[in-house]
Each structure stands twice: as structure tokens, then as C-alpha cells.
Image (cartoon, rainbow, N blue to C red; front, side):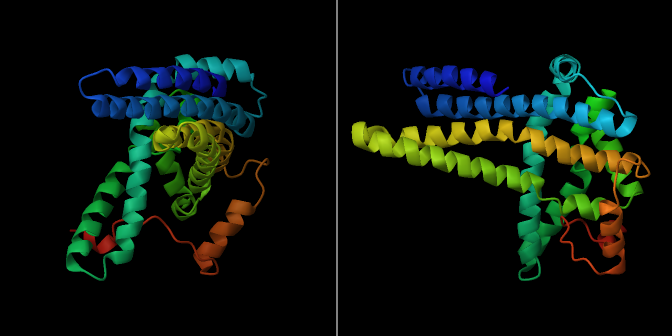
Length: 274
């Protein structure tokens, strides 16, 4: 997937150069940027589905799966769900960040409280129908994206794991890794262009950051899929002998009040009743 991403981004750069000859180059370049981001997300999710199937079948059935077969399955049977999830999951993750920010401000201003309340209502309904944890069930059972999202969240609710998965920082680590990689690309490219092509330093540096970030995000699909598979497989069968007591002990600490978890803000119960 990294090789395919590199080739596609090389062609994409040529398309950006050609867009300068159109009537509205900025609009064309913005559209190409969204197209590349979605394509890279699809590639990342294909890798995610492949790894999720390999890991999940081992935890759930004790099977040693063929990685090539899982990759072919992700590119055929599960490709539609990967494309659909690539449109919605990044937006949902962004909504989670907004909800966290508004939750910190809601007690200071009435307008911000209204915004936070509205955002939390939207998040509570959307998150059940579209989340990044769904890729595990898509990979294992071939479910659709929405159905897999609903079933996965029901598993978390049944095992009372919502607070643990809400506090998971794997997505944040993958995001920051991409930002660090993009920043390194900017430093290298800016040092070169500032010396030879100074007029294009800002433009080329921005493209370098964008490409470096997306390539790293594709690579980080492997650890992200492993963590997601562990959580979802545990929720489906917590008595499996392959699991240790890590999650069970954490749940016990949360219930006893000995562990501090900062969950994703959700609608308070007093509002859901109305």
C-alpha cells in the first residue's frame, strides 16, 4: 500500500502542475487535495482491514490466516465499506475533538453551552452508526460499515468498555506521528527549495507536509489495526484464554474509582430523558 500510495501521489503531483492551466486553479487544486486525502484514507483502511482480519481470526478462532488472501479480500469484498468509512470516520474523529473542546467551555458561556449540548447530541447519535472500531467486524464477518459500527458499539456496551475505548489514544498517536513525519519532510524540502527555488518554497513545503503526513498515516494502519482488533475481540469473547487480565483489571479500577479516565463527552443522562 505504501508503494501504491507513492506512485499515486507522484501522478497526483503532475495533476497539480497541470491544474495551473485551468480557469480556476485554486479550486481545482483544493478538489485534488480532497481526492488525494480520501484515496490515501482508502489505502490505509485496506491495510487496516487486512491486518484486522489476520489478528482477529487468531484471537477469535485460533487461525493462522494467509496475509495475501486477507489483502485480496480487503480489496474486493470489503472495498466498498473501506471507501464509505474513509468518507465518514475522519469527520467523526474531528467531531470528537470538537466535542472535547466545547465540553471544556460549556460552563463558562451560555452560547457555548448550547453549542456543546447540540454537538454532544449529534455525536451520541452518529458515533453508534460510524466509528473506526467497525473495521474489525467488517474484516472478520464481511458486514457493512454501518451494521459493523452498531454491532461493535453494542459489544462495548455489553462489556461496559465504553470509557476504556473512549480514552484510547491510539488515533492521537497515529495522527501526531503523521504530523511529525510531515514536519520532517517540510524541513528537508524547505532547506532545498530555499536555496535553489526560493519563490516556490512555501508551495512545495506544503505539498511535502501533506504527502509525508498521508504516507505515514498509511504505515500507521498496522499498529492501529492491532490495537483495535484486541479491543473488539476482547469485547466479543472476554473469556478467551489468549487474553490476559489487563482490560479486566482496568475495568475493575474504573468501577471502584481508583482509576481516572477522561471519556469522550457524551450527552448527560438528564438531557437524554427529555
